[in-house]
Length: 110
Image 1 (spheres, rainbow, N blue to C red):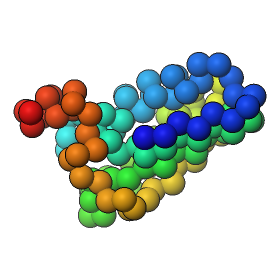
Image 2 (image 1 turned 120 degrees about the vertical axis):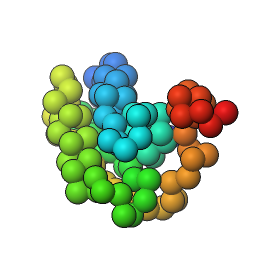
Image 3 (image 1 turned 30 degrees about the vertical axis):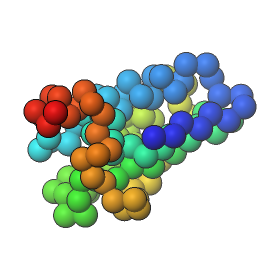
Image 4 (image 1 turned 180 degrees about the horizontal axis):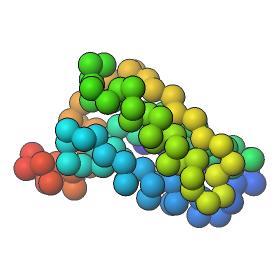
């Protein structure tokens, strides 16, 4: 996962965004989208507008229509964020290898 902070970005904004992402869950998996490895990148521009590049566990994910807008709305609500957009990508495809060790432990995969 890559965080790009352009010059002029408010200090600590990236940590606030990550905290919000950790509050977003795929309802079928009891682990947040950040720890699941669904977030591929966070780009914060000089105006504190945020682009989140993320994927879903599969193209047939039942929350494909609702999870990205929910993430976008939550990130837009972070103090200091001027705008937010979520871009869903399927490349590279998500695999359980993208999960953090904490997520694997929580799902008894270690």
